[in-house]
Length: 499
Image (tube, rainbow, N blue to C red; front, side, top):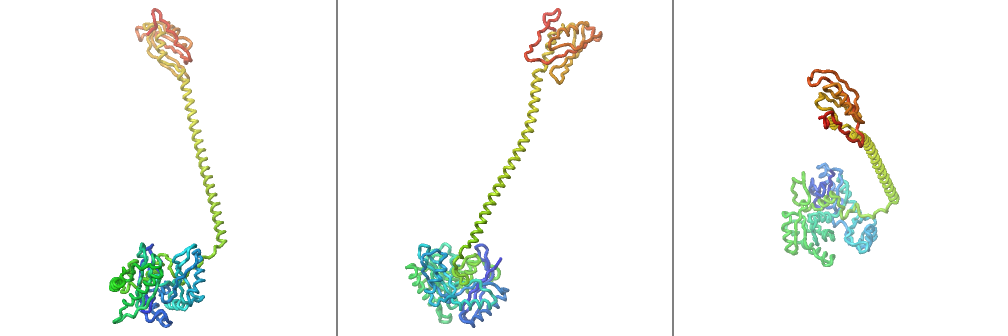
């Protein structure tokens, strides 16, 4: 995970913060201060700053790193501008045209950036324009380069501190003033809602015995409050936020609140970040002075564009590339053709799958139809067979009615032979009093459906009541529709059929 390095210095001290982002959380790995001699204004002190920064960074293995640098308000020119109504993308060109009239010393090579405050295509634009002298920019760049570092951004120190304060007050409203105290100067930044409206850097008397910096600071705050009232059409600051902890500025907090009658809050910059490693183990005596570097770090780690960046000022968007438009149209058409082709292909696949399923279903149904037809044919055959089949119980009953009297014969065995066709045969094995009895049975049962195929008899004494053993085969034809039972033939000497 890439880490970012934020750097800012004044005449006494340089402050550095190193960290990275974890979503919306800013993780600070290192935060340290480097004591300096001289200020950032002259060439000799720039060499001294570079040497001390190089030594401090080298001891931490941070040589040849890209850094975010903040510059104080006293090193730049800041002017409010009024721009006629226009689209926002036209503002960079309009600010460049109007800036020379607002900045008396502005040259063609001065970097200019701006912050839109209000306005639209139908309303006048109010912007806050900032310009920096190429001489100062080159001094800062040389200081950073001589320290073995690379300049990545150059932002305004008061704006960076205000950005961090605004992160702690996402739902805050009204006008407030952010006070960032350094060794012998202070940044006074006025914020309306979530927008920086005014920024001043004031010189303070050098700290020492008998020197009351608080009085000087309160006087500067009072003058800034009056300027705010003029700038904001009578609106007033409702709260003053001092960067630092109670151990640093509790007495200043009480004094400002007493003298100005305003709500005064303390803001610990490290409360907005998560510290780890070296930063979590150390305790900084002047933590309030780290608000600008932590603000730069938080903006970069969360991909928030700084309000003012002299290395990357706002530019007019480049004109649309017609080839890009043609390429986009071509890509859109290609995507549309591919989408239609894909839809047609999927539709064909779907129809093919449905046809395959229908063919399989047809084969399945044809197979089932064959089985059903075969079963229907079998049922019809069974119906035909059943309709013309012989009811053997009826046949036996009919035989009983037609047969001679019971005293003339006895049936020992009767066998029914049923073939594959309707009808069948009845085999009778029994005993008779005389050889004429079987012949008489045959005569009595013979009709259109019954006839005797064979008949035989022989003497037999196994049953003393009957003297002959006989076997007779009677063929029974299938019953035709409309056939009625044959009438019973009475036996000799009886009035009805034999049992």
